[in-house]
Length: 534
Image 1 (cartoon, rainbow, N blue to C red):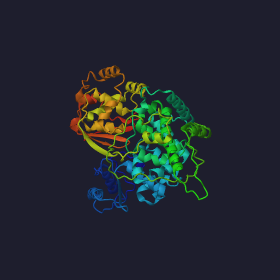
Image 2 (cartoon, one colour):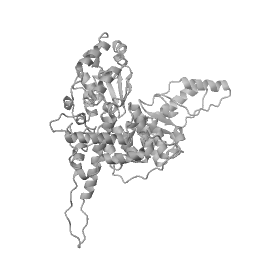
Image 3 (cartoon, helix red, strand yellow):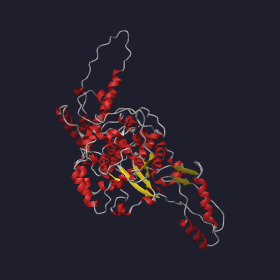
């Protein structure tokens, strides 16, 4: 299957060799399997419809390679060559064609043809299920195409909920039921009502959404019921981006907080619509309108409880024998238009009041305005940068050890994001604060400037962390500031982090300590991290 191919793989769908002898044909086939095919790019996918040459058995491989290079160096030609910069871009294009009913007409999608006879919702959810770790990047690519809302709305409630269950499993927690989220939400609101202004800030006031995240999801969430499976899937994606570590530890609480914040946006939208003036006839008089107080609005927990009575199960499974009809798209607000290049948000956004429930008694319009400020522009999502402190990413392997993961879970409310742990741990080894990697970490935490990182809580259980570091790395001598000194290039997306460094950067003590192995999928970071040495 094309969807299971590894990087730098060449797959030949059908090879036809016309030769006078079977031995000659077998020799050509073997030589093509062993030949060094040209590279398409770091993460590129290139489909070539047909290669056709006529030559002697010895000349065939060379001529096929030359023809392949020619196609790789030319622009797209849908009749013969199609290229995609990444697997995420490929999947976004495939899902878009499935939505339009055009996938079966394009030759380069033949490897996915087994999905085309299924209902659109089942086909899309099946393809996404094969690439769950890549889903944030696929969503970002769909948003660039202006198709994110349409693709999400094409999913049925049950298919979207099943994807949310699978995504939760990949991230290491059980997806809470709608009723569980509602119960937690009710207790959070009660606690917020009893909270005095002098109380310490909670974890919900430490982080702000990355620029561009709300631009992607706001139009969809404003159109869906809070208990809809598609709504729940989006909440898990957002929570995985914001506080992946705490999401593992307290999924119901995190999802309840996010649900409340976006529900306040819905109430604010309805309030704005009701405030619009209506035409009055000559025989009518305008009566003063009574303002509803927040207590008169239906609490979000009621909507959750109503849906929970219908759902029954916490994690309903998809019924393969009873496919539901794809719902008609709801009226949508247009997505904010943006190109492939983004500029950073320039205005200052306070770290507090991002997800806090402390002000839940305030009017919905106020909640919507200061909880999720509209970014001036979408943040950089697919880009790269140069770093001289690339060894900071080595510390991800330390954080991923079982004892450190237990520590992070224990103090998840203090530092709810793996990026915050990485930054504070790097400071213990005298991290250079002027490096681009520090700016990147601030961006992942939704901050506008690296200076705001100073507002993060200090490293929890510092003495215990140092004890573990000395026990694991003391004998190797790598636990020194020099560990962070690694010059390289970092490429990133909403789902992947790739560090590229020269072969000369490999250090034997670091390797023996197990710090430069590929971390892979890190649920507590919400990313796939890989190291490449060229």
